[in-house]
Amino acid sequence: MRTRNEDTRARILTASADLFARQGYHGTGLSELLDAVGLQKGGFYHHIASKEQLLLEIMLDPIDRVLASSGHVLGAATDATRKLQQLGTDLGQAMAADLAAWTVFLREYSALGEDGKTQVLQRRQQYLNRWRRVLEEGMANGEFRKLNLAFVESILGLFIYTFVWARASAPPEELTASIMEVLMRGVCESAPLEHM
Image (cartoon, rainbow, N blue to C red):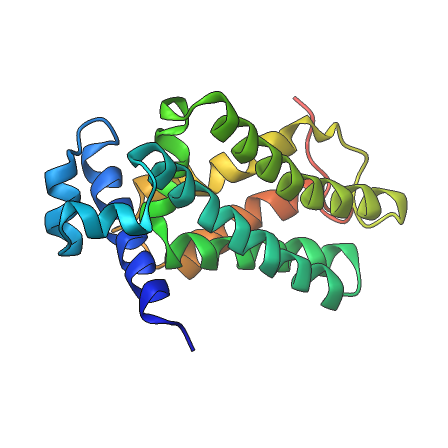
């Protein structure tokens, strides 16, 4: 059970992510943040050290959660094909659950200081390395065709852009299924690609 401080902090992160996703980090003033969370300046700064620290926490929160959930996926799934499908499902669910924070993750990276950028990039790489390992496993055991894995760097972007741009046009499960259908057809050995 969360404490009152944890609830307040979660409320600050959620409301701020919504504002930053709609208006941008630089387009959102402190007074708007205070109004959105229903706190005075002192109460706000009791929970958050600075506006930049708030931005960093908004960006780290969804990637930390998907790092945790993907770790469970990799521990439970048996073969590379299933792991890849479940990684996609897990990421789609994460996008749907917190699209505002993922939108901020995508759009506001340049507003971070060097330390914040380093933290975000390290976690992003840690997460993408999980996808890479699954793909390497699938290539090694013959489930997946031999591929140049440079495209792995774009997986988070593929999901985020799809969810941001198509948020009202389709349910999250349908968006995830579409992304994963394209990805699975591209990597699976049993679905040969025609060469141009």
